[in-house]
Image (tube, rainbow, N blue to C red):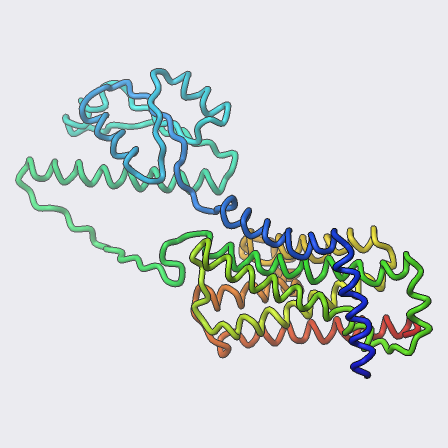
Length: 376
């Protein structure tokens, strides 16, 4: 393997990237846009639930209960006059939750009788609906404790001590902010875009432009051609990783809690997997259109859907859970979560590093043999 040949192939690819505006756009603009969009727009937190309240009781206690709901950061309360208005708000998607306080509610409370409330929740999004139900249930229980405490004080009785007292401590993501989970995960998607989707067009382009025959005639081996083609995109991919890490820290306050060089090592191996996969797709398809579609189906979509990034793998059917083990992004995101959120070291993450290394060796070997079959 000659270094001069690798440099020649890499130089040729660098020149093409510089001349091709679309490649530069994919390499640098799209990763920046993804970071901004995912960081600011995508949020798995449930806050500011649009809530409408119909108060038929119109007493000091019902108004106090509404203020109690409105004071929570999870609800944004709008008062209405009639149940039909609340139904219309729910039907047209202008509210996610409706609360109806019936007449005589305060009278029942002060007479120590049951005082039911009607709560209507839009369950179109089941995750959002179930979370909202948990929030409103917790606030009602908290208000019940206040009323029970006042009742016991009036009767001169001691406070009831609950038999089980839960002291909850949140580890790793103490603020429960989804941004702390999303920003590391988007790095895996960015690497797949730069590594696999761009390189999937590299060799296919040589076939479509007719330059592959010229390359076969020059003394360049399959290994030299593979490394030379992958090298420019490796530098571009690592640059995008560093930019993503910097933007995550500056814009969103998401920092690497563990060793930074472990992140560099993981990104390098994962990027090598993506480059090998992209080049293998390019050799097999020999068509820019087919290569582009194949890259989206085999790299980008699995990285989004089957990597434990947006959708939890634990909620998937057994067959899909088994398939996720062959998705490189799942193991890389496991490393990112360990480095960013859990402050873990190599001793806890070595299995994911090993799996990615084995994937790279397998994909690189297959791509090398495919290139040898093409006459390189």
